[in-house]
Length: 158
Image (tube, rainbow, N blue to C red; front, side):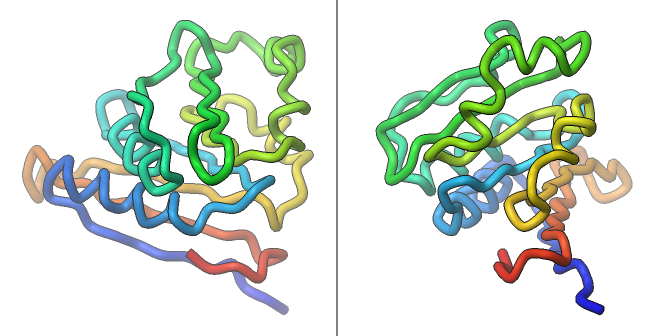
C-alpha cells in the first residue's frame, strides 16, 4: 500500500514563506491543483506570490478575495488563482467556470480550498497537493509551519 508523501518547512519571516512558494512553483505542472489552507493573515498570499514567481510570472499577484479568480498567463504555464473565502456554496464555483480552469492547461492555486472540499474530491488525486500554513506564536510572531501532502495516488514529490 502506497503512503501519502508529505513534507514540512519552517519559516521565520515572510521572505522564507515566499521562498517556499517559489520552490513549489518551479516544480508545478499543468493540470495540478494546489489546495492552500490557513487562517487569515497566515501568509497564503505571500506564499502565492512566491509560487507565481517560481512559474515565471512577472505580474503583481494579490489575493482575489472579491473577484474569486485571477488568471496569470505570462509564466511557463498559466496560473489560476482562486480565493474562495467568500464562496457561499460550490455551485458558485461551477457558475464561474471552475471545470474549465481545473481541467485546463494551467495550475490552480486555491486559497481557502477547504471551503470547497466536495469539488476538490472530484479531481483525480494525483493532481492535487494540499499545502497548509500554520502559525505557532510560541516560536515567534513571524514563525510559520508549512506542511505539504501529496496523495498516495501521485508519483510526484515536492
